[in-house]
Each structure stands twice: as C-alpha cells, then as structure tokens.
Length: 297
Ligand SMILES: [Zn+2]
Image (cartoon, rainbow, N blue to C red):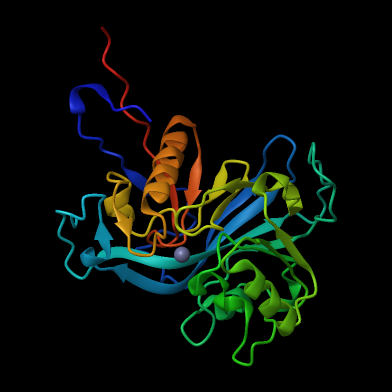
C-alpha cells in the first residue's frame, strides 16, 4: 500500500451497512441479514450475523511496532463484540463454481466460526431462536483455532454441537493436529483439513485466502462481495485508521500488520466489498470508505 501524498489524515469511515434492523432499534440478539446475494458463478445466498457475546477491548491490549500504546483514549475500552456469521445457500440453487469440484451445496447452512460455546456464548440459543437447529448446519468454516472461534463446536462434555457438519480448517502447526483429534473425539467424522488455502475445496464457491499473522493458521474466506476475515482486527475504531497497532493476541505482529493493511486497501479499492469481522462491533460487517484520491497535478 502506498502512502497518500500530503499526509492527509485518512478518515476511513467504516459503517455497518444494509441492515434490516438498526443496532439502536433492536437488541443485539436480533440477527442482521443480507438477503438474496448473487454474484457471477455463485449460488444465491443470504448472510446473517449473530452476536455470540458482547465485548470491549482495553487500550492497554494494543501496541505498535515501537511498543507504544494508542494515543486514543477509550473509557471502558474500544467497542467490540464476538460475532458469528451464517451463510444460507438458497435451496433451489444449482451450484456453479468454475474451477472447483462440485459439492452438494444447495440448501447448505454454513457457519463461519462458532464463538465461545457455552456458558459464555449465545450463538446456539440465537440460532435456535432464528429457526436453525444445530443438526441442520451442514458446514463450519474456521478462520483459526482460538477458543472464541472454535468453542461453539463442543458442548460441556466435549461432544459435537453440530453433528451433521463438515468442519473446514487449515491444519498447520502448532495447533492443527490436536484440534483434528479433538474434533474426532467429539464425533465430527467429516473433517476437511487442508494446509494450502489455495487448494481448499469449499462449499458454495467459497474461496480461501492465506492470512497468517494473527495465528499461523489464520485464513480468510470469500464469497461474492463478502470477505470473512476472522481476527483481522480487534478494535475497529482504532485499527481501521491505524493498522500498525496489534492486539496482544497477534502472534506475529509484523505479518498481522501486513495482512491487515493489504486487506483494508483491497476493500477500499473494491466497490461494495464487505469485511466481516469477528470482533468489530455487532454485526461486524464493515464497508470501508475509499481512500482519498491523490490531488490532480
Ligand atoms: Zn483469534
């Protein structure tokens, strides 16, 4: 990413857009919905966001490469959330996914991450309230293997919460093998474990993008204009303007900064791109304002 001339402050307004329900008018328990998404080569689908748990991020969690904390003050911490996304493929849609092995995806119900699990996480209760029994979830895509993303896969006894689902994840050290064993012990017998994101064959035409930095296995999933970006950020109100700040959970800070900076730039340069973030304030679906154009010579 190039630096904008004149060092203009980058006012990168991120906004939750297209919601059927405004956050101020509805409790967080209400899912937000993007209905009837279509894109060339993809089945029609709908995206819903659920809040698994409320959250805020203390300023002291964040540092830049010089070891400095943010100058911004945020009493009570930066606003955040733990969000989970559900992608519903329309039941009657044939799958057209060029270059990819066809999978039986019409009617697929695809979760991206699963939140904390009980007792902290509300995902299961909110899915049920929205009409989705856990055994009707067909696929789970995992952005990475941190507890607030995989916790919802397992009940208090370690058994599968979504027993019909295929679990898609990137199996690399240090955590991949142990996670696969935990899934098998829970009763998940359909594991799609891949090392190379570019070679992943995913339902409904999803593609997978390497995004190591937050963790070694961290990946993004893309479907049409939606990019499900896991833990690309932990404090949207800080990091959208200052991607050089990392939360302490970013395992490889320089790599995380590079991934974050590149994806923000891609979103700003791509009309209608939506960035779905696990920890942006609910519903966590952001449209980034375009970067200001350089002034004419
Ligand atoms: Zn994480």
